[in-house]
Length: 171
Image 1 (tube, helix red, strand yellow):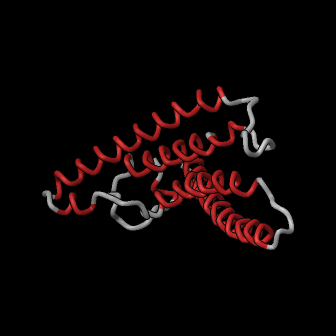
Image 2: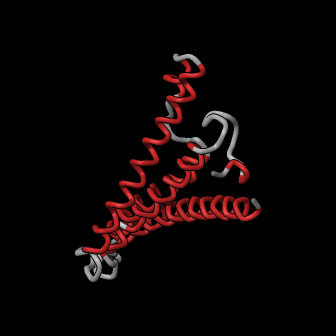
């Protein structure tokens, strides 16, 4: 039991850390865009990597923040549908939908790996210092972590809509 608690504490810490990294990336993108526009308008010099890094950054911000957002129940949910059906049916409907989300996340993570593998050794055409596989790696990470979080919600005794998640709410 203690190992399970430790796992979920570590998992929650990882999600918090990834959310902080995502927030830092947002700040970096904001500042780099200002830097790029300013230097171009002043005709000092032009940096070519800002657009490519900003595009990657948008993907990373989304992918790194999604598991944390799921844990905090910040995603759109089926609460309206759940409130229209009887409580017993609502419970099973909720578990079914959470299981479908779990399967979808595992499938997406599983399908991301061959794409990452095919892109090893290649670089981005606009920013030659960025390995191309790094464009797909956050997708694998995000869906894998979301799958774990959906498993956490699916196999716990309570409802998805009951309060926050605590480490003892693990599988």
